[in-house]
Length: 485
Image (tube, rainbow, N blue to C red):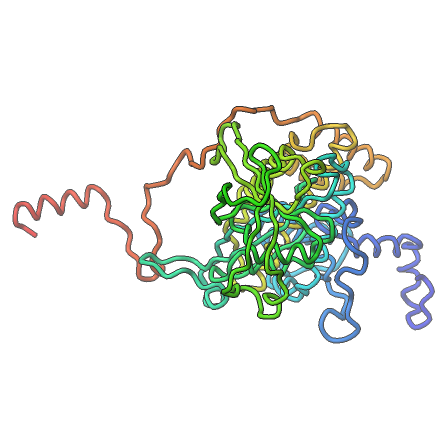
């Protein structure tokens, strides 16, 4: 670098840098918040966010696609952080490494997030889920086959014209916000999210799940609630070699059973409805078989806190010797843990109410939170495997808090040995700080405190009026009583 034939006058100024200059440039290019990529870059597929040869994303910017993606993930791990906080940290890091100056405004960072291709996020989501599953030992239940849980939920978006066009709210007497319906596919082994499908409230969860069938492999077992126990879905899953466990809205009369397998265990034959399904194409409907043999298992759940004490499940696992009824009931009972994963997303990672003002940006925000969720699950799986702890007893919130602080400490370490020792200490801490076993604890769907002091903002800000104070209301009431008003 010191040899500059075109600028000989600069030789004496660049000579003191020597071999440190390339190293400084490499550190500057890898400069992201808390050095997240040094720990989790291996969980992402190679070639993610490739640099374009021309036009968009072709220049070497301050907000490169790679750096912007990791900044977005940092926001996913810190859901209260704004874009301005991201810019402030990048300013501090670039100043520390003698890099270029960055504008104090967050507009450039917001435009860089908009340039990120949405098609790369599902790849990162699935890759992080696969890494989270690698450290989990296969279960002996259900012949060791991979079990995946499907569940749906809704998210609230800011009230903007673009969001209303894509995610129109349900019309009612009170003003409502745009709502996004999501369906996620969990891995029961680690709790990581494999795939995501999204739509508006007028799109059914069945049709959203139909877009995720390509993410399933043969020999998989899908567990779902009564919203997925339909003939059309079970027929599609059987065509792919995938089995189903779940409840159904169809009436199951044991007197019409085809054969009896045991106590509260029998086979039934479902006939194809003459009316085609609304969420399937005509070709898909014609390809379904005319009848399906399903197994019905009835059992009781005595654990407190569950909404259902007696469950009746339908499944395509027809062999009672390979798949005992008890294992089928236990697999469905573990589905509740995946609902708690959705609660972690909406409560701990603040996914219940999004903040972006456009549909595409909202989708990227959802993917960033889900990827951050998978990274936390990956850390929990590593801690459970390295110290032989029960994964179910590791705290998601505790792992998130510990991961934040240990990432801040790791960003100040340059030695690989010390960084490895730091992460070993993190895993040891997580394995020792287990959630207490509470087998009889109830989990009612209720909140402790309800804010009632202020009125709801149901109208635009420029036309709403504050509610009069109590003393002013009492004064007006006395004046009306005296006939002076």
